[in-house]
Every structure is written in C-alpha cells, then in structure tokens.
Image (cartoon, rainbow, N blue to C red; front, side, top):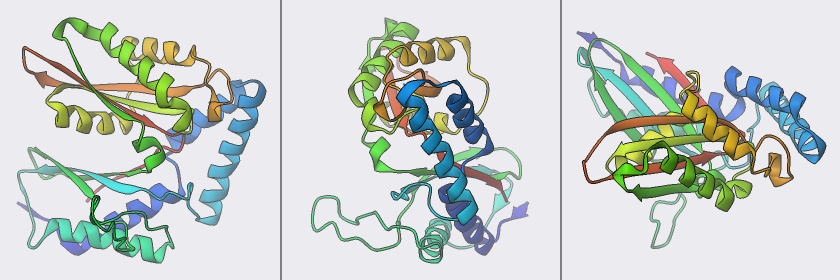
Length: 272
C-alpha cells in the first residue's frame, strides 16, 4: 500500500492551478502557433494577439485570461493508495492558496440562487473520481472560465443517430455559441452513459491529447467550414481540435454533451 500525504496533495493542486492559469500546455501552444501561421485576413491578426498573449502570460507569470475559472479536478486513484484526513479539504486549500498567492480573480459564489456571496478564493472545486488498480494517484486540473462554460450543451438523441447525429449537434452548437466562446475552439464531446456522465466525459475529452480519429477529424473539418474564425472575425480556424469520449449507455438513448472551450485551454496534470 502507498500512502499519500494530504499536504503534498494541497501543494500539488496549488501548483497545478497556478500553472494552468499562467502557462498553456506545450501541445496547446503548438496548435495555436500553427493556426497563426496558416490563418488569413483578420483572423490572422486575432491569432497574432492570442499567441502574444500566452507568451506574455508565461513570461510575466500573470493570468492568461481575467476569468481565472472554476477548478475542475479529475482524480485517478489506485486501489492500493490510502490517506488520512479529508481529501477534498486539501484540494480546496490548495486552490485557496493559489488564488491568494497568485493574485487571481475570485469568481465563484456560494449560493447560485440566493445572495451569491463570493468567498474570495474560487472554492469549492468540482471534483471527479476514477478508481483504478495499483498505486497511481493522478491529478488533472482543468480551469473552466464561464465564457466557454456558458457554451456547453446536452442533447438526448435517438439511439440510431450515430456519428452523423453527433456531428450535426456539434455543428449546431458551434453555430449558436461558437463565436461567443472565444474561438478558435477546443471541442470536447461526451457520448453515452447518462446525462451527467456525458457532461463529465465532454470535459475529460478537452484534456485528451491523443491523436484525433477519422470521425473526429471529419467533424473538425465541418466546423472549420463554418468560417466563424478566430475571435469570430472569420477565417480558417473556428476550432483546433475535436475529441470524443464514449461510455456504455442504455438501449433507449444516446446522450451527447458538447463542451466548447476557448482558445486558452487551461489544464495541467501531475502524478503524486
């Protein structure tokens, strides 16, 4: 059995939250720079600003975006790992220290319907757990600003809709909200499970850097044919990636969740 010290977890979450807000993943930077080289017209001017922005943020250790986002934490925990204490308390403590120490904007409210009091520290985080075999303890922290979170969709399709149905709703969603979500977009799609599982999968898909499958490439091509372009100013790159994650579902349904993420896809990973 492997013991995880919760102080180590707190420090790891603090580090990841700051890292995600100040520095894009190398893969994301590569995608943005490639789009800048290949974009045309006003869209290219927007891409130039986007590239300059992430370079300044990384160099000066300042936020990539004024919306420093809600923390969405994915934990992969092995069955041979244990800890003593409250794991969620440690995660939230790490976020609080990151917000205070990094001078990040506090954006969360404790009661969504009543007084909407802002605690000033961007907690609590949204935490998802995946139990696996072994001694692994992997943390993925996704920073989700609400310019793009407000461009999240859930569809309940007929079982026979298949890939064509998925492509159809992604295109519909991008047409409706893509220009508001700070394109070029990263698009995560969750298919299957129940409604809440599909939504969770769509966010996990945003952090999936594996090569796109043929069907995902086809959806991306169709999205880019819309011509919305960087910043909604027109161009070749309305989106940079489409990733789909699947889960078994009921014979009577096909839940599809679509998460449109802005060009500043902010996430970081660490193994404790």
